[in-house]
Image (cartoon, rainbow, N blue to C red):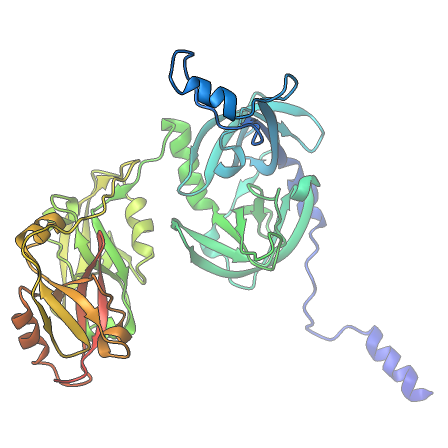
Amino acid sequence: MLKRMLFMLLLAVPLAGAAQLPDFTDLVEKQGPAVVNISTTQSVRNPLLPQVPNLQEDDPFYEFFRRFIPQPGPGAPREFQSQSLGSGFIISQDGYIMTNAHVVEAADEITVKLSDKREFKAKVIGADRRTDMALIKIDASGLPAVKFGDPNKLKVGEWVLAIGSPFGFENTVTAGIVSAKGRSLPQENYVPFIQTDVAVNPGNSGGPLFNLKGEVVGINSQIYSRTGGFMGLSFAIPIDVANDIANQLRTAGKVTRGRIGVVIQPVSKELADGFGLSRAQGALVNSVEKGGPADKAGIEPGDVILRFDGKPVAASEDLPRIVGGTRPGAKVSMQVWRNKGARDVQVVVAEMLDEKAARQARRGGGKPPVTAPTQHGLSLSELSEGQRGELKISGGVLVENVQAQGAAARAGIRRGDVILAINNQDVKSIEQFNQMMGQFDKGRIVAMLVRRGTNSLYIPFRVDGP
């Protein structure tokens, strides 16, 4: 009996130094009124209606479509209203609101509902699809507004809280911790996402992510899910990135970004060894736009960009964010690694275009290629002048075949690739290719520059001997 009483007493006494769970009540009470519910409507064509071209009655195909494509009945609507929900938060007392671009994209009408149940029609000031950021405004004054925090001071493991409208349930509060910082996601080159395990679901998009001081440190943007629902991985746009975008949208109505005209790829451990780098770092340039800023600065394929405007480029995904955040026209210093040494170059940043044109290169005609077997699991052929003209290259050899289980197959070389260079030395012919490869010891890793379609990339290739 005495042992049981002592055990119960120990349970009742908190352990010295035990961490207490945070109390979010004061934060929610003070900051909740600045969080809004956003609903949008847009007109969508009835998907059940057949796609009938708009033809004149004297068009020879008019009668065909009239007879053989069923027409809707007299009461069938040609359009219906599609509705969607999201969240946002007030950043100024005069009604400016931050949210996600995908929340208000293509909306015909935007309704903002405050926590006190007042509703306002909103207009879009501007949106940026590359960062999924939008700025909207309602005609109101004296509104509660959030305070911004510094996402750079966030620590992994720190408590954070989200307020939003998941599935339309307004002012829903969820909490968790910062899981990681500076996350790069596929097709998202301009945002170093904050990863959390805060429960975020459809309708939370555009809502704020708070730290324990009640400051907004991010905008909840997307989740990783195999089911469509929350699975413990949510991502927020850092508020400093969002605020920069919002300021540009507010003053200019659009976002301008810098560009230098290079195509880059990651630096693997094998490529780092081949280039003489002490570790895998930087962004490897595999092609340079002719006449672009990098070309004018003397940047060459095979250069590894280590720093840009004083900022370290730890990984290739860092470079688009740093360059994109640089104002067009700025002259900045760039540190590159070339021939096993670092050097500084000056580059004048240009403005990124809204539209990017890409054409699939075609291989030209000419005489049938002469195929020559080589070592390393490859069969190569010389390129004709027509092929080189179409590809806009002066040299290279064409990969006609790749031996299964050979060195080339293991490296990832494919049939149809064009080998342009080895360790930054141009390849002009099959004979030269064989001579260059014969200089390397078995097991040596070389950096092979390959043209694949319209893109170029470096591939680490382990020499298997003659």
